[in-house]
Length: 212
Image (cartoon, rainbow, N blue to C red; front, side):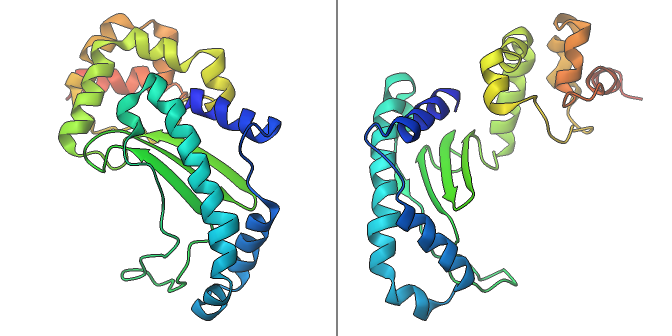
């Protein structure tokens, strides 16, 4: 996501082949206030022209960039449907109030790139979404086998500029084997990163490694 974030920001700031039109932002603002089928159907042409089409152009441009360094992530580029799945939701609003694009492998098959735009936010993400147990185990095992590579990656100035510190809920029930290598190899000051930057990494890792 770091490389893609840089490219997207450059595209938007310098106008290098892509911009998201103000009409599109206005449409999304209005949709949030008028999230009804009748309202949307009367203005569907606005959505197609000023929201969906610009995002199709963006994902086409980004797919070319992705193919240069991660060809597997360039698969199946598409603009997400604006229609919400309301079957199991108390909120029956029929439409999403943002527009999203994605590319990469399917759910449970590997990593994906994701981007969405709202009138107030540009969100860029990448990685595994709801990984299956075997996928999650493989990722954790790779980190445990290569702790220094992981620490060096997430502490670089460029990474921190875009993503800040590594954060999240620390898995106190994580299998001990995950940290077997990292406990032995990672410097003491780096353990905080494994615990979400809050200093719990070393304590939690030892607890997992020496369960009582």
